[in-house]
Amino acid sequence: MNLKSVSFFILFLATFSVFAQEQEPKGERQINIVYGANFTKDEARFPGASIFSKDDERQVQFEHQGADLWCDIAIFYTEENRLKAIGNIRLQQGDSIEMNSGKMDYDGNTKLAKAWEKVDLTNGQMTLTTDTLYFDREKQQAYYNSGGKVVDSANVLTSKVGTYFMTPKKYQFQRNVHIDNPDYIIDSEQLDYYTTSKNAYMYGPSTITGEEYKIYCERGFYDTKIEQGYGIKNTRIDYDNKIIEGDSLYFDKATEFASATNNIQITDTINNGVIRAHYAEVHKAKDSVFATKRAVSISLVQKDSLYMHGDTLMVTGKEEERIVRAFRNAKFYKTDLSGKSDSIHFDERTGVTELITDPILWNVDNQITGDSIHLISDMETDKLDSLKVIENAFIISLDTISGTGYNQAKGKNLFGKFVENELKIIDLVQNTEVIYYVYNDDEELIGIDKTICSKIRLLMADNDIEDITFYVNPDGDIFPETDLPVESRKLKGFVWRGDERIMSKEEIFDEDDNSIELVKIRGIDNPIDIDAEENERQKNQNDPINAPNSKAVKPKKPVLKKKAQTP
Image (tube, rainbow, N blue to C red; front, top):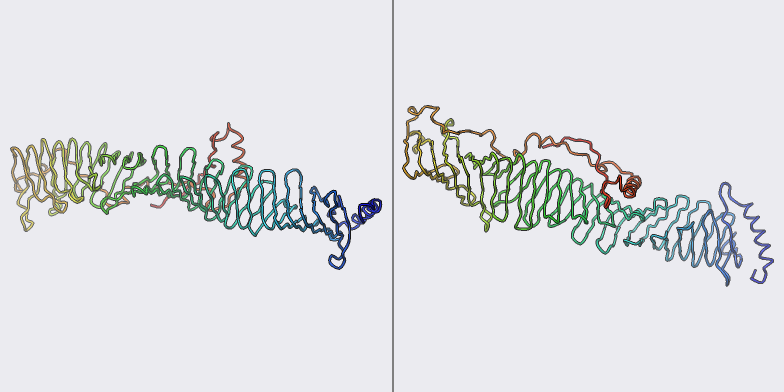
């Protein structure tokens, strides 16, 4: 047949149409020829097939259940209801899906197309390119397993394996997933990507690297348009010279904010400090960290870790200008020094740590109290330098030989000097008094020294009083034990608080801290219906009245199922 044999061609089409209808598989609709152009057969190479090729006017065209296919050559197996298309192939489904390739096999019974040689698929919002693509029109899915690339208005995405779900307009990428964006890069083992919202859901080891942050997680969400997301499994964020780790982490570039929930550790890479808690926030613009729920700050002081706890911890300020605050029920511990007060305030610029409201300090076995206690560090060496106790200064230690008496010294103010982080010199000034148990070299009690004067200096050795010097008209004596009544062996204001002494880092936490009930993070142990979550997220974004944030909707909050925390 050729173009001159018009009447024969029309007769052939009519006859072929009747034949096709008679041969239509049961329950399936036959592939229809829209334009056959040149027709021939080659039983030796293609037994049972009709061969169509384009003419000078147009390509060969077929139609099947809402899809049209154009190509240069088609080998059509009518009885089997399948065809092979060759050359400049275009498959159009509705107004949105278009697929182009060099070759294609299409089965009308299964509605499955296999395309290869420079394949591309587009839906108007994105373009997929690959060497080989399978298009399942029954399930409305397209997939590849030999590497592919997707380009949309925001990102360039590549992976070894990929599936495109046309109804939710979602890609599921697997193996060597990589997203290129001018502002960040994402690498993942598996990633679901919604082409309309540009939202990404990550599974398996995944890394997001931005200009000023890096996020790692093994399950998480990321809004690629606004650089906002969260991780809920083995998550870590490197941000603002800090490493943030926790069960659940949230990040928002626009507000320069990150938060974490459950089993958190924040490492300050510049100051070598660590904060642990069960809820924390990092505000980059304010150079601040807020932490609560069993919060503790850990810093290194001369090869010894200092643990500071409070119901709430706040760290603010730039490098070398840090201020650390512990609010309510504040405590700290290191091996030779511990203390507590209502709050603790440390200023890195001055090296001063203040214990505020009902403070108490234990220097090994020495109990020190006063209205306000200041610990001062050497700014050059970061070692403890000195101690100040302002108003009502009182130092007490148990007499270890008798096991019943107490060595005591008091005054208006106390000034101490540390040498190699050990308290060596203590000066008490104004209205000072002492009660001290005096022994000979055989540890036999000589008597009890009870003296008042204007100033007292205590020289310490191995954290015990080695020598006492009285200044300015001392008035007192060493009394035999039998001559000093028991009720006279305690100075006015004496309160022994040995049962409150913090003996280990675990003791900075009380019963409430150790029985905190943690929120159950949704999705860590059980699968999440990602399509449902995506629909909910889009609904919130389209409803600014009910959305939690009209500018940038944060991820759905975890389901609050409580679980006891083991100390």
